[in-house]
Length: 408
Image (cartoon, helix red, strand yellow):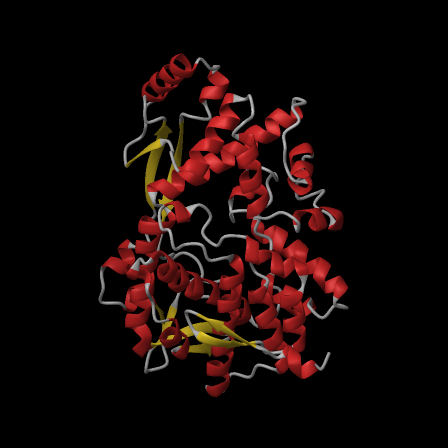
């Protein structure tokens, strides 16, 4: 194939035309591991609340790479020296930052695999791809792991004002229709600069930063931590745990070959080798949906009931409160469920459960967003802002929730 044919243009509904900057980046996008992201939803079960939220991790990765190109152009223009090799490594690092996500994005991390995050899995994918591409991803991996000597490179990939956040908040706002999350990513990027090897925002961009932080807070309460999305994701994790539990006890459940493997094996960070990477790469949202459609007809009450709930959007009731939920309340609900459905106490845990959610729009203790004043001084945006609520937004807001059947 003519190499020029690999430098294609993609039309994106958020930014318009996205260009693929190099042949290596094109070949990574074409790789089956990356193409799998077309079948991984960006927002998990949020489409049960926002019908338009069917965009994928593929959309997001391409958008984040586009923003990284813009950031490199801006910094180049302002005299920050970034070599072609470094620029390509930045594009690769942001392109592959989410490649380790499993079906419905976060559900796998807490059910099918044990104590391994999607970031760790992403890194394992990168290592495998690095071998396949003759170590041409080495610099990108160093940046991703924050091992490269230029600190602002990692801040562009994984910081409080990184290209990941600048894309997903704007993109998720667009696809959900929640206008409160709409941010001006391009304006924020145009205000970026580097001082003492750290990323800063020029002082005139302070209002755009304030808008970004407030938009992030609103998106978490209104979208990411929406009570219906929350209960749906919890039910999906419990469904997968139940399937794994039944499989362990000798029940043969209908499932794809890939999903069956993870239900039959205990996968941890220690044994997540190249063979497991290959098997994991064959898992996507469709494996889970196909399984749920089959599990509706299974004899197990828990598996069948939760599958129906998720497919038919007939979910548990959820109450969110700032107060602690009493043990007496939980016990009473479980007893009512056991009596109504004639199930064991261990099974009632799948229908009555509690948890905690956190929202912190901005952190002042770590990796702050710094402003570059006209006098050349660098200060934390929360200290520079005349918006008193920016300091308030740095506080962690904690809420408790309890889920239980609507009929109880």
